[in-house]
Image 1 (cartoon, rainbow, N blue to C red):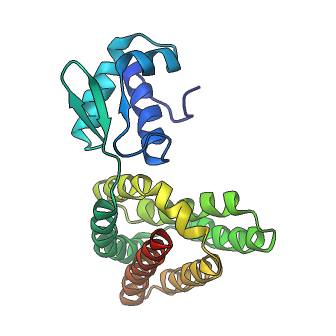
Image 2: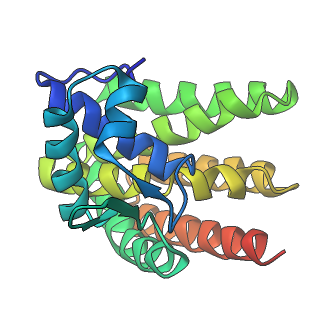
Length: 217
């Protein structure tokens, strides 16, 4: 029932489940949800649901309404633009830092990721491609050597999961995306910090342009 990420508390597991459902669009902006409904759906008591609701409100994904439950805020288009603009700066910085700190093991992982993505593009396996896209960025974030940047960017990346799915579903975006990944990889492997920084920022900028165009259609 719950997603696979390990969490030591029931409230944490409920939070992750609801966060995933909101980000993926199962619960849309304006939808009303109650503790009782979620409690029944997940087969848990209302206490961890209540705690998860408060945590989701702090994350900006829910608005609690006294005696009524909660209203889904989700990730709006304005949020999306803000997130991508922040990522343009931080992804560039993370990739610059990764270029300086990356290990041979991570170089191999990054190279294999690009090769596997090209393989699955030829197979038109979009689900595998989307997972590999996330992994590509995670490898770079971790290779940056900064836990803070890695945490911030991983959270931002996850919060746009639904929009990234839309973006990668647009015809011709996948080949362009993998070409951008290849150029980033080459810059990282060659130790060119400036190019790695610039290419990573540009990659995020192109992703934003693409997803906004897809939403407007």
